[in-house]
Amino acid sequence: MGKKLVDALWGTTTRKIWTIFVGVLLVLGLLLKIPFVTDLLGISPVPPPHVALSGEPIFSDGPSWLTNSVLTTIIVDIILLLLAIVTRFSLKEVPSGLQNVMEAVIEALYGLAESVAGKNASKFFPWVATIFLFVIVSNWSGLIPGVGSIGFYHETEKHEEAVPAEGEEAPATEGEGHGYRLDNQLAMAGGSIILAAPEEAQTAVMAAESEHGKFVPLFRAPSADLNVTFALAIATMVMVQIWGVRFLGGSYFRKFFNLSGPNGFMKGINGFVGILELISEFARIIAFGFRLFGNIFAGEIVLATMAFLFAFLLPIPFYALEVFVGFVQALVFMMLALVFFQMSTISHGSHDEHH
Amino acid sequence: MEIDAAKQLGAALAMGLGAIGPGIGIGLIGSKAMEAMGRNPEAAGTIQTNMILAIAFAESIGIFALVIALLLKFV
Image 1 (cartoon, each protein chain N blue to C red):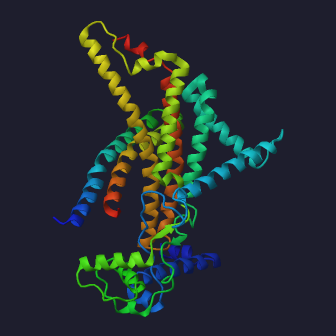
Image 2: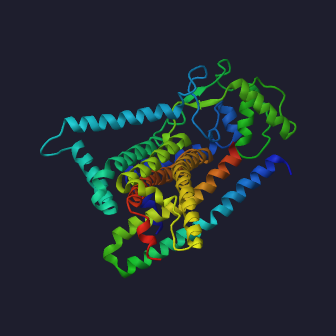
Image 3: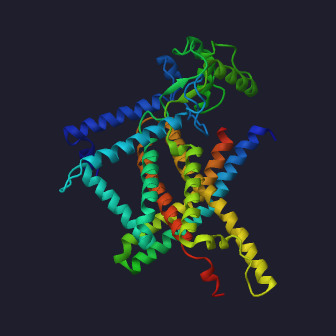
């Protein structure tokens, strides 16, 4: 047993190199958690995750609509358009390379659409496939290294450089990494008197932060911004109404305003059900938007937290998880849109008759 | 109670209580899917896809709680 383990870790030259590499990473990761070492080396440890609910404007003096998530959305759009155009103009009888991949993706999506929507699949397919491709690329765009970690400090330029020496005197006030953060911030503020009580520390950090400026990433995954997911959700639910009117005509709205029934009591019940239907349309928008946003946003924070807890190796399994979650959420968004489209084409009154 | 302490408590409660329901739900979905796969191994592929979809729906409730907890803690 022991021999097996030694063989697995130290058997061949490649294994030796891997073992040494992993060991060095583990030791480095542990060392970076010790404040004394980081102060000695003059480097700052991995900062706590940067949490911002919505996209922030990239340039502090630029237009306020140009947020980091808008920039990434444009990049995602360009990637998708280029893929579509390149594939379109290099179509061949015998597919190869990129065309194979695209055909496989489109066929799989079409099969899925057909299994849910049957003969209406060809009408719904462009919508849901576009949603799927956009959502999956924007989910995965948040996993590219540099997205969310490359950015600017706003509002100040003068204290950009490394940590001054005063940082060493700073006692860590709180346990965990937050203490280092305080030290750094105060040192950056020019080594002001440090920290007697937590409240003072808090205000000192605020002052330091306002002097040092706020960190704003250059890129941000579009689906980690509530605006994008809500826009998708609203567009989808508007399309649901449009499909309903197209397939059922004006009688589609009888779902919402239904006062039929044999007696007054049933009329009241049906009217109330109509109100519930109306509310549920809006509830779907909210659930739709928050489901995608929550999954991707939470995933980003999990990754940032794991990198903060232990810089090396620990985030890798979570990366794999997030790749999977990004795919599943794109699939869920597409399936839900399909199911809602399909439901809106079925006359609601027909099953009420059975009761 | 101080406002910061209340925030921390609120975040912990939101996450902890919010994870109960989805946990039970995912467990039920998983157990039923296993049963179905045991009875009909040929259909394992479709069952698995549908199971993952259903789990994603149940999980999203937990994710709502997580978002609330993160908002309370960080914003």
